[in-house]
Length: 173
Ligand SMILES: [Zn+2]
Image (cartoon, rainbow, N blue to C red; front, side, top):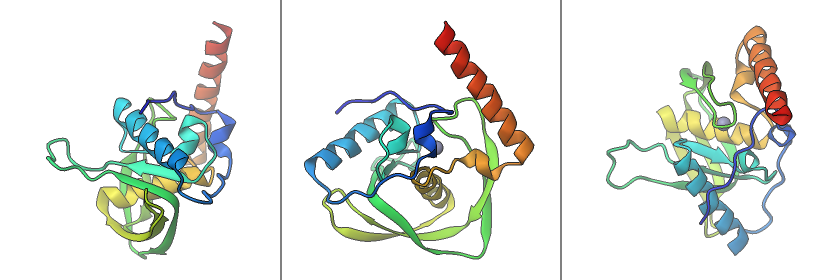
């Protein structure tokens, strides 16, 4: 298992619609494990494959508390929201691909997600609270959508402008 370098805004891979996984093979399981390692090393709650440069529909999550003795690690291929509540919840979100910025995002408070687990078996998960926000954030990544897209246009454009400038600066160094 290996942690991978992160794709950072404005990397175009973050704006692509990722391709579905045909079958959960050993290679997909390896990818899931590498993503869990990367997420842990970067202290993230979740990670989507495009964030390590792969435009494929795989996400991992760990939304347990730090003092949780038995944390639940979610590994999902082709996750899809099949039901969402009408009531909404707001949470402050950040993203490993947009380091240094956070913003309040409003999303459905409860969702049901259908996905393939690491064994390729179709499962359904019901999520509320932090996990609901996290799974929606990660699935957004697979559709080229970022949390900054939920912020005001002024704030979003400001973040994109600053991060684009930083990326250019780093290339020139
Ligand atoms: Zn993210």
